[in-house]
Amino acid sequence: MKMNIEVMPECEIAYIRQIGPYGRRNIQTMERLKAWATMNHLLNEDSIILGIPQDNPETTNPENCRYDVCLITAADQSIRDDDVSKGKISESNYAVFEIDHSAEAVQQAWHEIFQELSSHGYEMDGSKPIVERYATKMVKNHRCEICVPIVNR
Image (cartoon, rainbow, N blue to C red; front, side, top):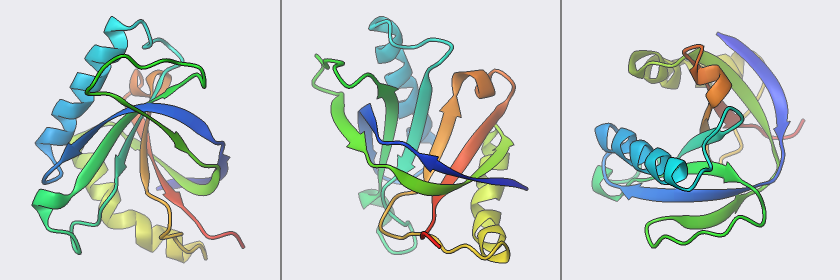
């Protein structure tokens, strides 16, 4: 699995939160965000959508797991929708794994990334969430990324 280290800059986001077991509902929430972004003329070739699981399903009951589907926006982007919230992601170091954009590949990557991270001598920063990154240009080539926050060395 291909891994790169990068600093993800601070960014503004618009997001919809889904609460419940991870899986099919995450995809439905992503479709809702994309429909909202399209309706508001915010989805284009340079758009980046993030999927952020906020909880570990091994330590949080599935019905309480939170999954945020985010669109990176301009800092001054106004949000006029009760279902969409505004937020910010802070700058951090990430190990970025590029994978196929399929449910099977994403699921397999979730099982392999931690061992891969360890084999390269990195430690996950548990104070920050893992991020699934879907850049429009990559998705068109059937690729996406899983970004794991790492502790500074």
